[in-house]
Image (spheres, one colour):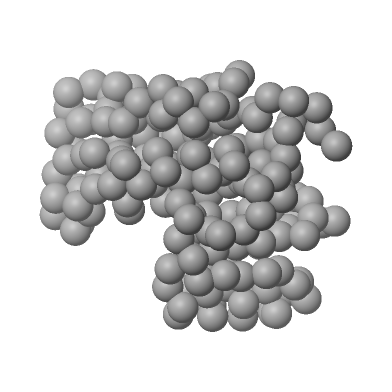
Length: 172
């Protein structure tokens, strides 16, 4: 399950990494979903795309092994990020994993890095950037019920920032 499928380019990478997976993606933008469908069609792939919010998919509980998103969290308020983590937990089967990525946390930047991130956000039309980059993603994941939580830069680098959590229980 992918939250915020957008144009389908991350969806494509998921399909390449997990060629046997049945992928479901969601986004609020019908135009982005149409583009994602084109990307799938051009690559001979079939995935299920839904125009629903990641925080309220309406899909059955315990339906997925992985819930993921790529660079979406800074586009939404922190309370919606928390709601998406709760929804991810609900959607996951016991033993499933959540993997979200987003912008570098302000806590991982020095003052100059925070200044430039703020400058880019304000001048780039990113109204939720500060809120997202300040949110303690590890705490939010634990509050949602996840264990073995990791919040770190991917591959030891500051970008993209990764938040991983595991839903307790045995995988089916």
